[in-house]
Image (cartoon, rainbow, N blue to C red; front, side):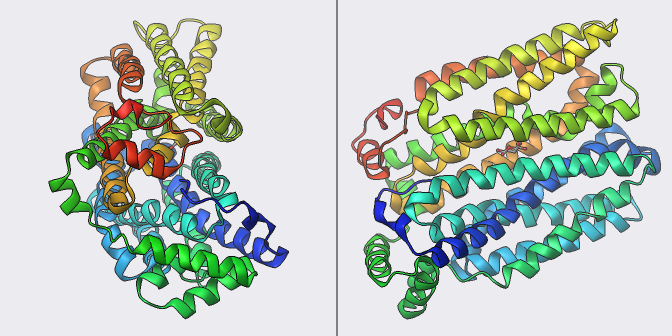
Length: 468
Ligand code: BGC
């Protein structure tokens, strides 16, 4: 997420302003960590849950995907929530639901309760996934905004890795209840940390509390001159009220950017990334590995995801959005195509072929983490015009969770119905289609202001031309 207004001198704020910004950004990013923990934790727990409750693959798919259904609900209600309760209190509500959801899951006496607990957890991260980037963008100075948003994506992948590692540790006792319960601890830490956060200055201004907003900004920036400038910039921007749904009904140009955001998030999910995030042990089982190896390879998947995200953070602003997406979708299509090929007729026959299949799955992970993972979130916030930004981002975030749910709720059925190779080919083929869609529809937004994008969109330029 970047902003159109540039204030290069902001980075020269006194040290105490900079360090409190860092702590605040880190705390808000813990929401990303919880997002990741939630995504990652279910993969290692599944086989133990299935054995304990004697449930079918179909019910297991619902244990996995009820969380995404909850997240879609959370994301839907969130723009209202974060406007009326405020960003900070919305995050608190997310934190409370996260702790409750984790405990309900850990103590669930029957699968239905587990599905309900996962739904509550989902609402929590639906709230967090909408509010945390918004809050970070609103408190961060222009100069560090991009970096703080990428830190958020890094925290998601770190959360997934930590969940995979903790699952591996608990797998030796087969304790799925501990796997699901232990993530309440970071939830509690997050809640405690949230008390130290100030309200977002922009939200305070929206409520007419200019003095309080100025006080918060003084704490963050530490320089009266900069603060006055920022306060008048926010006041200027607030003169354009959010008229999302009305604009959506009335303006065909805005409808195009909303649908592009929706398409982009659907593309991110139908890469198949979360098939691996949710079902990695099962995939390694199909490759012929025993439980211990399945868990360790899953942890390796998580580590690869974190490392490749770090690479992405280094190259994204230099390569530009489209070349990065082209590379990512190509790598993903090849990775999954080869995995499918290697698994024709069951698990790969030799040890070397098994290992090669694992490597190709890791290649797929790298392809996602260096491209669609961080980039789609960035693009979705860049393409919406200011007056409709909240609506546009809410629509794309909602799509992210709905399509995430579809992917989670169908994978085992696809494996059982279509077959393993065919399922991987299906996702590989979709990645090839996304390559073409990127060429046809995605704009290059590197290095251009949001105002430039907005004026070209609203002037009716082709979507792929609204950037550079
Ligand atoms: C996606 C998640 C995914 C994660 C993996 C995020 O950008 O939205 O669905 O699980 O990346 O790192």
